[in-house]
Amino acid sequence: MSFNPEKMDLPPRPQLFDFHGVSMTHYFTDNWENVQNFQARPDDILIATYPKAGTTWVSYILDLLYFGQMAPEHQTSIPIYERVPFLELSESIGNSGYKTCTKNNGTELANNLPTSPRLIKTHLPVQLVPKSFWEQNCRMVYVARNAKDNMVSFFHFDRMDMSEPEPGDWNNFFQRFLDGKMVFGSWYDHVNGWWKKKQTYSKLHYMFYEDLIEDTGWEIDKLCCFLGLSPSAEEKKQILACVQFDNMKNNNMTNYSTVPFMDFNISPFMRKGKVGDWKKHFTVAQNEEFDEDYKKKMKDPPLQFRTEI
Ligand code: PPS
Image (cartoon, rainbow, N blue to C red):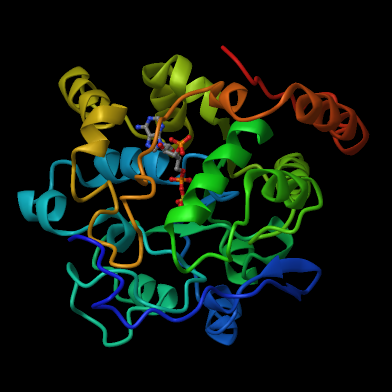
């Protein structure tokens, strides 16, 4: 599907506002009552991330682990964002796949998922996760990415996704990121909040984008251990091939090319998939300012990120 703004009745870019102490846009709060009252099931698996940390990658890995052997149509006709619904999203983002509900917001899609377990995506900071996920003792997979690359990826995403707030120029975006004025709030609060939760909630698997890049197979092994899965060597080999960056970029079910409000002429969803791309964006002065500010905000020694590998 190609992007053609003249043929589309695009609403203006949304504004950020404060929502329970977190910056949000209406796309993630309009359906809030249903989000908060969402009834999780004990075998639901919640995939939680700060935006642009590797959500789609891990979603696809989990989808293949659980449903890779299902009828081929599952893999060839249902985009990943419908197989793994985005819980708090209040509107439909595509127009193919499961046609089981009329509105296609995140909670309806999740409620109508025919799969078991249900894989559900969220970008919510830990304190806003609906309480039934905790009550049902659901398993959760959190993916974190180093702040510098996360910021760069978020910048390019906000340029191409017309449902995101206007990104402004890079310098302006850089400052906003440091100030936590991003959709889903501050990166610092997000990664720290989920890390803290991991200390008391044993069903949370915390992983890093950089580790996935370095050794995808090993990270899949750890995920399988957490989930109690034991794929055959052949299955694992197939999964590893499918989730390579280039294969996901060329796969219309994982590259978001079916989403009408993303302008791939500005930037593709599957953009670079690298650790260290920030070096092409940060000026020397910005890097110094970032590092100084980072030291003040990140005081938890065990939570260490790698900005290069
Ligand atoms: S979203 O919109 O929040 O769901 O985006 P998310 O999927 O979290 O993050 C998108 C970034 O992840 C990169 N990506 C990958 N990198 C390496 N290998 C694989 N297979 C892969 N799949 C997705 C994607 O390219 C985005 O990062 P950038 O740095 O922009 O390329």
